[in-house]
Amino acid sequence: MSQLVGDSSRGAPEQVRASRGTDLMRVLYCNCSYSPVVPDRWKREVLPALVSSALDVVAVPDLCELAMRRDPLLEELAEADELTIVACHPRAVHWLFHWGGASLEGKAVTVLNMRCQSSDEVLTHLLGDDRPTGRPAPALEPPGVLVPWFPVIDYDRCTHCRQCLEFCLFGVYERDEGGKVIVAEPERCKTNCPACARLCPEVALIFPKADECPINGAEVVDEELERAKVKVNMERILGDDVYAALARRRAGGRTRLLKADKPGDPT
Image (cartoon, rainbow, N blue to C red; front, side, top):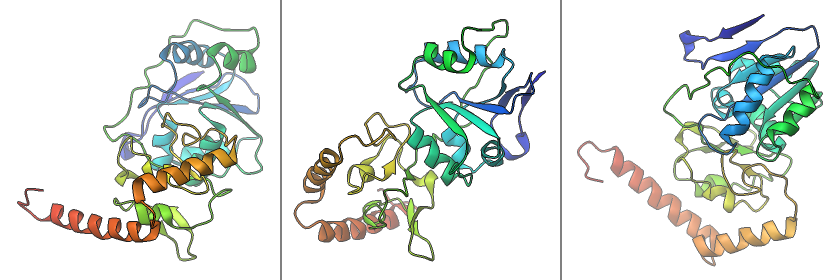
């Protein structure tokens, strides 16, 4: 049995559910509909095979979009006895779920990375040599005009230095009551701008749709190299006195944002 599930009452994207077996493993498939980071050909090969299989499959247009609005589906999936996620870099997926209120910590989760693994590799892992056909791929179009471009924080790396909070002019970051830096207003982030991540001294900020590694959630392979790159970026963008530059930037940003809020202001 398969069905198309959508909740138009809260503007949720349509989700394709295909359940034909009693296996405990569930599969979440992300179509990454807002971004070309996964080749279309791979998606056209993977999705029809999955929804035609006996696996319990939930296919969504975009995992980032799901996380941005903290869809309850994330928590439901995180509670599965065994979960396989077909999406992007595992580190990005882990912290997207975390930000969405559904921690994967300690769970039986496998992430298949379609940014690096081919459609054949993904299908071999899930289906072996049995590649069912017969059901066309469902349309998983972007459900809205707001591109879900926003950072998630890798709290295994973050030291809460607040540099991202000081640098960002758009109010994306805040501190909670305990002083922990959080992504508070993801929709305010400027699309395709990962500048704050390039300045993070701990390489803790992830933009899952970015092209650049490890900003996109790829594993940090060379710690010294990444820290050296951050230092170069700081000097290039902020100069020698980082904290003074950040203070000036924040003050200037507040002025520009206030002016932009005034009716009839030409800026």
